Structure formats: structure tokens, C-alpha cells
Amino acid sequence: MTWKKVCAVGDVGVNSVKLFDVDGINVLIANYGTGFRALPPICPHMEEPLAESGIVANCVLTCSKHLWAWDLRTLGMIGEAEKPLKYYETREEDGGLFVNMVEELVYDFESEDDLDDDFFSKS
Amino acid sequence: MTVTVQTPEGVFEFPCANGETLLHAGLKAGVSLPHECATGTCGTCRARLRTGHVDIGWEDSPALAKLKRDKGDILLCQARAKSDCLVRVPAKVTRTVGEDAPANFKGTLNKSRLLTHDVIEFTISLSKPMKFEAGQFVLVTVPSVIGARAYSMVNYAADADEIVFVVKRKPGGGFSDWLFSGSIDDTKVEIFGPVGRATFAVSEDKDLVIVAGGSGIAGMMAILERAIQSNYFANHRGYVFFGVPTLKDGFYLDKLANYVTKAQGGLDVTLALSNETPQGARHPAYDEIQLASGFVHAAMASSMADRYQNVLAYLAGPPRMVDAVLRVLITEGQLPPQAIRYDKFA
Image (cartoon, rainbow over all chains, first blue to last red; front, side):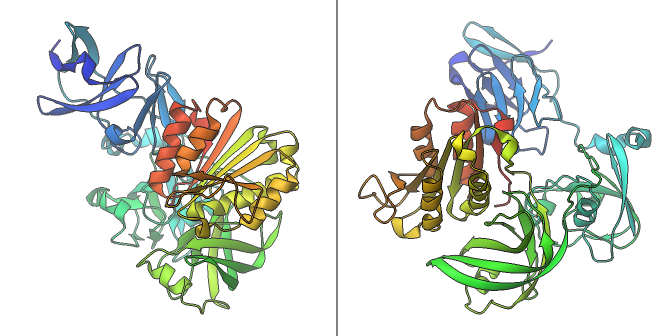
């Protein structure tokens, strides 16, 4: 466990997103009212920066580019979303928001290349 | 040539003619290759070429710049096959058989007329009828201008011999300059379509909220025409918000006023003026049309507060307008993604 402080709990308003630099790694904090989520800064669809295009409402994060959406309570995919969100564990302590960050979470846009031919050949 | 597309859920094969883009070839064959703008700007149609040769097309496309070309990334809407090809598409793709797939059409441009100082309407008479859904668009290619342009059909008919378009002048735009040059009638053009999923069918059974900025009203006119033809507003409500800078920038107001009358109380139309203060609550020449001041997303927000139950929303217009409207629909309106329809070709 490598807990690092991101910000003060009051730094991110309810139903909003904000980008922070944690030891050189960009983390997006989403406040959905009854909790927080710490996410990579881009959408797993086409790398849209969620600090600009992310909308939080009714405990749901929607990327306004193509309306991929996730329930922030369960991380379940909603609507058109085809890929899950990656996330860092969070906890609050003494008014601070902390993330468990061992290494940067990155979406595998690249590893599509490494996928087995078999993975692509089921018809 | 044969193109083979590998996706996480299956493999699809289709023929591709010399000089044809992979996207067109696939869509014609009923294969739902991912795409949005179909004109090289959005990047949705990106794929990775595994084997074979293509001409990648528009070198300076903004979407191509973001891809890993050294790894074989291409845009399906720009790339033309030069040999049999194998591509990987990292998205859900399906194949439909027997439905009305898009196709190539030839047409002649005519009946061009200015609707305002910077909005032009024109018609394309087709060599053969095209079936399309209200809200769809086509890709238009004109011999003297490089690259296709996407335009939504303004008219709606079950089997259309002619399709109508409306375009707002874009300063410095090559196509715009040609369109507004005053001598475009009788030009032979090529059409690919219909494309687009922001469509309306009579089976929707929801109240409609339609928000358009400038020439974004184009596809909305087809949607309203379809709705009115089937008396949709006899048992559903419709709310149209049309944003333009000033009163004299309004167009199709005669048609919109006519729709309000035909809908007998079921349809409200509001013209939102962003650069002028309206002189009254209603348009001086069209009593059926209400006026509002400010940006169209604000006019919608104020009118629709707490009235979003059972709503299906259609949006079209400049990207910033669409973004502002989306925020209201999602936060205040609490609309899920499935209740929002728009095609992203700016």
C-alpha cells in the first residue's frame, strides 16, 4: 500500500471533477456527492481529457464526447460504454483525500497490438 | 479487393473497389464500422492495418495526427485499399443483412437560394431514389473541391428523388466559398449515404426536445417533418429551441410556424437570440414562434426545468453549443445517454 495525499476533501466540489498532479502522475478526482473516485485523467474510449469533458451528476460520470458513462458507486458501465474505468483506491483522513498509488494506471490502447490472433478470430 | 476486419467479437469480410474508402466499402456491405464524422476530423474510425497496402488519404487530417502511424494506424474514412487488406478495429461491430445500407449516388445540384445573408439552401436531384431516416446525413463530393462534406437532409420522404440541404457560410472554407459563389446550379455531385444514427422514427413514443444552433436545424427539420406527417404531436409534446445571433438570422421560420399550427398545441418553438435583445415575447412576423434572449442552451434550461420526464433529446450545432446543452441535459435534466441523440460532425 502506498498512500499519497491528493488534496483536501473540500478541494473538489460536489458533482465536479478536478485534475491533480500526484508525484508527477495525473489523477482525476470525481466527487459524486456520497463519495470520491480517483481515476486516470483520460477516457478509456478515445483518450478524451475528462477534466474538460467529464460530467458528474446523479452518481454517474459521463464523458461528453460520445456519452460513455459509468456509475461511480459500482463502476458499472452505462449506455454506450464498452470499457470499464480503472481507478485508484481512495480514503479520507483528517480532511485529506488519499490515493493508493503504486504505479500509474494506464489504459491499454497499445496492447491491442499484443492481443493474440485467436482473440480476434472468434466469429 | 477484399478487406478483412478483425474485431474483438468477430471477423468480417467485404469487397472494396479501387479508390473506394474502407469505411464506405464496409458500410455498403452492412458492416457497422465505427464512425462519426466520416470526413477525417473525429478519429472514431481509427483502425490498425495488419497486412496489405492502402493509400492513407488526407495526410493533414487532424484525427490522423493523433494516431500511431508507425504502427499502422489509419482512418477508415480516408484510407483506400490498394490490395487485399487485414485491419483490426478495437470496437463492437455487427453485420446487418437486407437493411437499407448506404450506397453511392450521383446527383445534380439545383434550386440554390440564400435564406439569410450567410445561409444557403440547395437541392440535389438524385439519379435514383434514396431511402433515409429523419435526422441522417450524407457525404457530398463536388468535382472542384477536395474532400467530402457531411450535410444532414432537411427534407423527409420515404423514397426521396431529391434531397435538400442548408449550409452556413464558413469564413475561409473552400467549400463555403464555392457554395456562395453564385454559380453552383447544375453541378454534378457524388453522394454517399445515408449515414448517421441520430434518427427519429415514429415508434419512439417520447416527448421530443430539439435543440439546434445555426445550420444544425437542418436534420431537425426532417425530424419535425416526419413527426408532423404522422401526427406525432397529437399525443406527444415537442419543444424546439433554435439558436441564432439576431432576428434577421432566423430561417425556415415559415415552416416552423406552420408545424406549430399543424401540431395544434403539441409543439412549442422558441427562437433564442444570442446577440440581440428580443423586442417582444413572440416573433413580429410569426406569432407561433416564441422569442428568448441569450444562448440556446440557457433558453432550453429555463423552459424545460423539471419537465424532462419521458424526454428524447436531439441536438445539433457548433461543438461548444452541443457541449453546453449536454451538460444541462445530463445534470439538470438527468437524462441517460440513451435519451440523447446527436451526430458529431462539426
